[in-house]
Length: 79
Image (cartoon, rainbow, N blue to C red):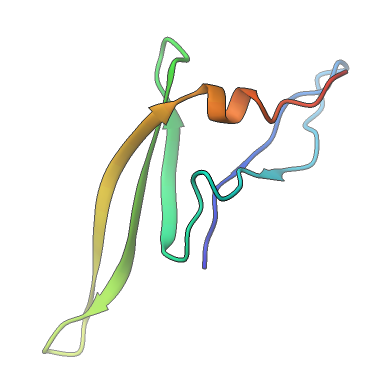
């Protein structure tokens, strides 16, 4: 299943390798659409799954969530 990852900038301005955010956010469902609030305090994302409709098409059945952005800040590598 798709998981959320975070990448931080290194001291030289380059992007460091992506880090899986972990099981505090990622579940057996699909997490997507993550973004941080303008003030940097909240992480918003969706969690859900694709559902099959009677006509054979699919529809995203997701729920929006938000958590304290410290969940990603705590993943920041020491440089």
